[in-house]
Length: 218
Image 1 (tube, one colour):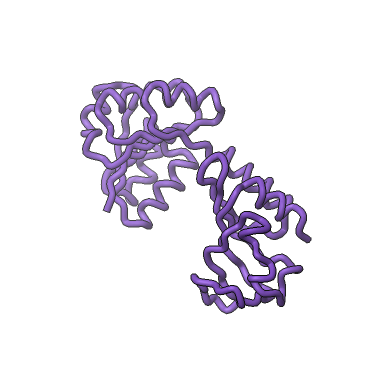
Image 2 (cartoon, rainbow, N blue to C red):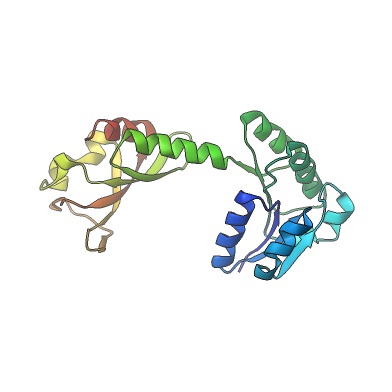
């Protein structure tokens, strides 16, 4: 079980908090709105009403005891900046802060954030990819060059052998697993594997090459 301090309970904070609870994490939530905390408190072991721009308020929360502190403030960047800096001053093990723009990210990293997330940007980018290719189900960026994609089997691959398609050599794409329409998951494919309609697979490779491939599929 991991422990988290979650500051800011807007839409993003609420969704994140509920997901962490489902994973049996220990979550302390904080918001300056009494109404917000009153509504959410029954779900959490610890729910605090506090303005975290105040260093003494944060000090009372024993910040270093948490595995990570998440600054999920959505509507006040100045507050997000100050809270991130305060958490750093108090010795937080790891600070993850929410940003809306690149310039916000730069300032948050400068004052102490270990990681900055862009929920709106990430959702928009994933939607753009899905809209441009009917084969892309989901994907995760690993770094600036490589990603993991979940793809639907292209029609031209159906009834063909893996060895004949040779996606690793021709497309720079490594197939990690295949999920059959029945729900069966195949973790190790040999060259004689024949793709079937309804197959979905997880692949790893160069982001640009995979996107170029998927955008050409019907």
